[in-house]
Image (tube, rainbow, N blue to C red; front, side, top):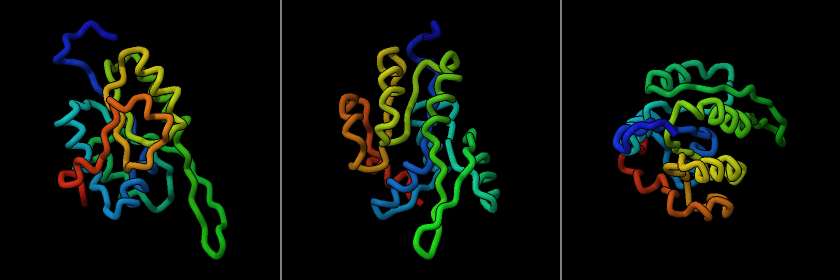
Length: 166
């Protein structure tokens, strides 16, 4: 931890975009990523927001808009799978999110993890044990039971629906 006073802690957010997007959609509404970035900055004082996202050709306008909203995009190549008569695009970003959090470790004092995925348990536990876990923002009530250990840090995004809804 850097030797900064409590009021000027450096806070970074690490966001699993697919978990966030699909979780919010399961609640019947869509997230405005620009408004969400504003919320992260104003409420949690997030200086840098790393958004982990699968790279899909044709989504360049989306990526430009996200960068303009002040996200740092970390891309994962995607895979296309046939599913019945259609196809599914898969871009699991878990390893990238963990790795980039560790690469940034010395640059932040506290982290906001945005995901309800239990695959991040070991990362969240490491952040908590190091005094660097600030908040876990989960996209819906169906987040992993593994994260219940950190219940006092868990915030459901639906609390901010009025501020971040598209």
